[in-house]
Length: 294
Figure 1: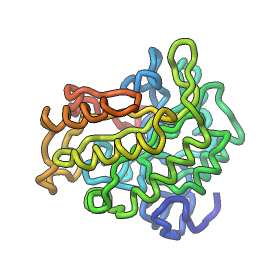
Figure 2: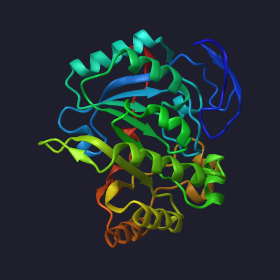
Figure 3: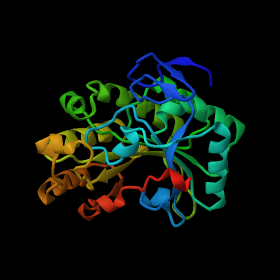
Figure 4: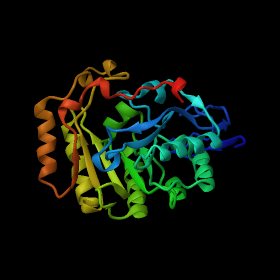
């Protein structure tokens, strides 16, 4: 794609982006930059199944959360630049491995290229759009008919928290309208005979140390707004990575009291979904990023 000014995400930075460079918030060019392509077994059960989810980890991010476990690629830009032809070949290889879906992880900076790729090649398995939730609804509308499953975060409802940890005071404003658009596109979650998701939206929420009030507010809003139209994945595997050490209040793992306070609250709602145990809070679950393996 030739040079253009980018307003794809809520940053609206109007950055000049070329094939191999960009001066916007994500710092990425328009050609896809990826850091890992492999079956992934650690997603939600209906996503990973028995054969794994076919993940493609993209470099760059529109959020750059201070506690990001993937900061090597989200903040430092580690990855390998590829063409659309090469991206299509990676998708075909994942399909041949028998994975249950093609899982695009943090793909927002490359929406233009992704749309172009899927216009040329539509895989026979569902496409998952795996995002931090900070999206523009009008951009997501362009993905209708391409994406089958949305897997967004709903990280924050309190603006002071989203500003402090993700430099996004307006996170909830955009994430809430984006989630509504995702649910409009996918409808009620649908599964095959083996319990593998074929269509729908799963909303992830990571409990942060010292911020159970934010978590409970998020669950309340999800329950009141969407109820059974979505599945919720409550995550307790927080590990202080990235720049978390610069923020003493989150430079630790969750306590059992914090974890069960939020989990017990979710169990009192009508929300359905998944729960990750505290035992999953280990650095060993961080993906291995090595472009030599691509």
